[in-house]
Length: 393
Ligand SMILES: Cc1cc2nc3c(=O)[nH]c(=O)nc-3n(C[C@H](O)[C@H](O)[C@H](O)COP(=O)(O)OP(=O)(O)OC[C@H]3O[C@@H](n4cnc5c(N)ncnc54)[C@H](O)[C@@H]3O)c2cc1C
Image (cartoon, rainbow, N blue to C red):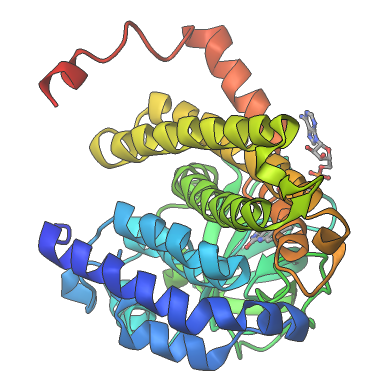
């Protein structure tokens, strides 16, 4: 079941206020500190944001896929870092919701819903993230336990996370040899490093997780042995739309800042927006952003109604378009601000630094192109004539 329209609208209005009053004024300080703002996290929990996406029987507000994505876009207009920390929590709960045993759902989901536990997803390794089937972290079965050895890198929320869904190798088969296993912080042999100092998204702590003979019960496995690649791929479709939503939020904020500045800043005796070169630039960016938003809405609709290969293809196209466009819009916003754009006294340099990561995490832009191209090769274009249902609207 999902939220009714009234609850969803009320929640989005509350998030818009929370973003404007609490998150946006702190964005530069969050970026500067490089730390997760625990007080804002608590406030977000009190608003019920982490309960979205968690089924009601496990203490949530219902398995609503789209509302958390809409919230992420709103939060990202204030602080992309905070938005990523929030949305990674929603995404990282998905494997347990999809494939966890009843006992695991009862152990983790109520606390995730209350914001009392931070989940993480650990796929990427020092040897690479694009090739998920190349995972080396090994889980070896010993009686009723798995013993895990390996190292994961660039894991969102790792320094503050309470449990990790770890994608491990359980056999040599590239795809069917992967298994997802949940490991709690505090388990002997698990250590996390400090947050990596990144150029952007600095308030979303990202770091390594090391497994040195970590022993966990077989009951911590999600699904069957060998299901890891499938679980990872399904989770990524959702998180790619999440990444795209954050990118849209950041791009929209950048364009709003740029427009406001261009209306105020005077050169050659008139506001710079009245110079055609600049007016055409903002017109083009606004048009591209409108197109990207429409594609995002189409993909989000597909994700809720029919999670098929076509949906995966749309998720990849949306992630590619929105993340590349966010990089373009934020870079042009810096250009519109001139030298002020490079200054930390204005917000657009931070937005440009944040934007770069969207082209990298949840699969790089090249990997999205590869996924889209493979589907084009197999099944052709994923669309037919224009949608006749628009005539009914
Ligand atoms: C802010 C942030 C948060 C992250 N959070 C998480 C997380 O929570 N969990 C997690 O598991 N990972 C996380 N990651 C890691 C992220 O998913 C990986 O960085 C990403 O998948 C790319 O892997 P890589 O960095 O190892 O680059 P590589 O895979 O080494 O790729 C290097 C370059 O080669 C290109 N390339 C690779 N293969 C191909 C190909 N077949 N065709 C064309 N080009 C190719 C890539 O596009 C890239 O440009 C995060 C990363 C960042 C930056």
